[in-house]
Image (cartoon, rainbow, N blue to C red; front, side, top):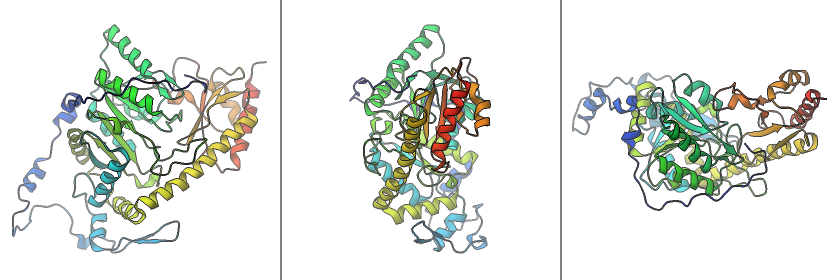
Length: 447
């Protein structure tokens, strides 16, 4: 992949004629077999009958729940009162609506419509955070032995915790500084066809602040890749947890309303499955997010989620719904601008420190989204594994890029890349860490 000098190329023009995606054709055997449970069907058949005495439900009575009131305080000192009986009951009960707590689900629907305007009648479901959602999405799309396409360097948890153990195959697509290119995707598919190999069914992408490379895919790149997925009838998993953590290097932070177009916004066919998460712009401990996709896929995903986990945490759904209602769009915009400003300051501090200490020893691009800086080691260092002992000696930790390779943590070639995080260390430690990294590279340079 490139090291900071490439420019995004104009992609293929976005098609203007919809080719509706046959979702049933793309479903795995497991997803095809999933349906609404017999018990749920039976119970629903009694709904709406006047005077019905319900002796059927296995939900505990709210009168036995341990908590009667709950208040939470925001950073600005405001208290949110969640003590109303309907909220306390919902916070402690099973999910009674298959797609999520209704006030939060309604917020997610309206929010998604305003930001992305999905053009193919896509629907929304609340999830238990992105990792669980990714796992379930792949279960719904892939059978053991099937393949998915992803960036050459991608989210390591996807490869090690999902793809490998479940018997899927990850096919790497070469990248430049803006992610995989439409030309490389086309060539990868052509090469597989020429060899007679089974073609992948799914393309997995993290389009903003990608972990580990931290690229932001420009609009023309998204349009071109979407067009290529139409050519090969690929489903697109748009995993976008860093969407709200964008902070252009030479422009003002975008807040809520200037975040750019998503693959979902281009999806006239219904082939995009978009995953959003509260983890990165609120807090990861809530374990909540939302998925937007074709209605048929959302149904199958919902059956899977309730068949394995009975839905997301009710308590955090009630809390986040109350927060979103309290903030409104204006409050969320203000929160995001504040958050983006903090991340931008930290990213620029790391970039400036790298300029001070690492010129001639490494190459990189200033991060404009997410949590990471992707760096290529130079100064004669061919493989990041060669610096591990020196990192410990100098008391600085970075992640070798090979851990994030699509083929697993031990690709059979030297990998000169490392991933650096600018979000966790105290700000005063970032320059110290960059200076120590420079010392490491100098120490292992061939003489």
